[in-house]
View 1 (cartoon, rainbow, N blue to C red):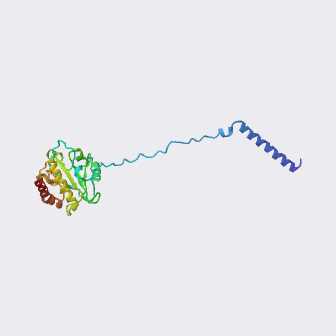
View 2 (cartoon, helix red, strand yellow; view 1 turned 90 degrees about the horizontal axis):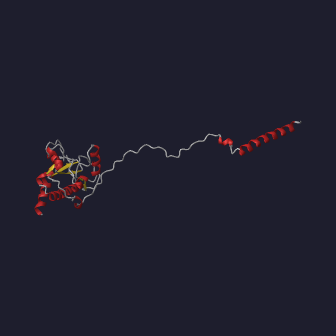
Length: 228
């Protein structure tokens, strides 16, 4: 057999063999592919780390005498205790968060008056304790817990050791105090600063605001009561 005939013959043999293999695969239902490993696809969503709990502040109601007038209860309010935050900024929601981090059940004050840095200047924010008519958590360590059980806590945002509250804050604290004194029959004598309560080792509510509380504030409240 000549060389070129040998090459042609060999090519035909190879073609016939390949054709037979392909026909066999088809008749076996694709036996070659069924022997291939099956790769399982995980259709479940990818695992993600549990989300970090997000602090949800207690809702705060803004200013307005209609909102200050909480449901009347049998709680005997005897004192109005003035505080300053000793911070340059803040609001009721922020202080609520800080107090909870200390292990308290909620915001310790009944009212917070903002200074324009954290809330509108002079805004009276009503804490959840007041809406519940619940004891305070602002003046501890007094005999019988007297000043928490019977004291309404008002905190003005600011540090008043060397600076004044804003004019808007002073207007608001005067209006709020007049309202609370009249509504709860609190004697003006019992409008006090935090530092006035027994067993307190603090300069709260700051030297500047302290003078205002025992001066202009008490005089304004007394005049208001006399005019009623």
